[in-house]
Structures are given as structure tokens and as C-alpha cells.
Length: 89
Image (tube, rainbow, N blue to C red; front, side):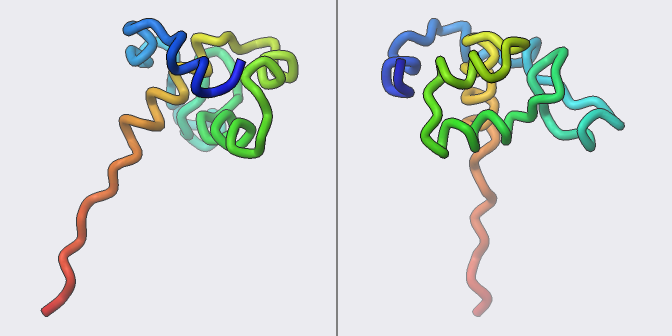
């Protein structure tokens, strides 16, 4: 299943990542991770961006679920906006 199919498949509740993505001080440097794992949101995004399919990711990391991958994508989407900087005059 590719990313486009995964997004089409995603139920509306997939955007609710609050219970699936955690940041714990001292755990993986406080970076956001899939709950109960040391797999960072960034790691998931890097694997997918590197060409791995969701199914390959799930095989490589049996401790995560398809819902966790969706939560990582939703978290990244929510946190991808950068503040707009005005040019100095």
C-alpha cells in the first residue's frame, strides 16, 4: 500500500495522534515517538521518504501499527508550518 492509498484509507480519527505520539524527557532526547517505542516520528518519515512502503516499515518495526504510521504523518503535518519571517528593510 503506497502513501496515496494510505491517506485515502485513513479514517478521520487518524488525525487524532494525541494518544499515539509522545515526547518523554530522557526518552530518545525528548523527541516525539510512537507511544511505547523508541521509533521517532522523524524516523518514520525518513523511511517513507527513502522509498520504503508502509508495509515494509511495519515488517521492520513490528512494535508499531498502521495507525501509528498515520499518527506520525498527522503529527508531522500539524507541525510542518514554519513562521513566516519578514525581510529586513
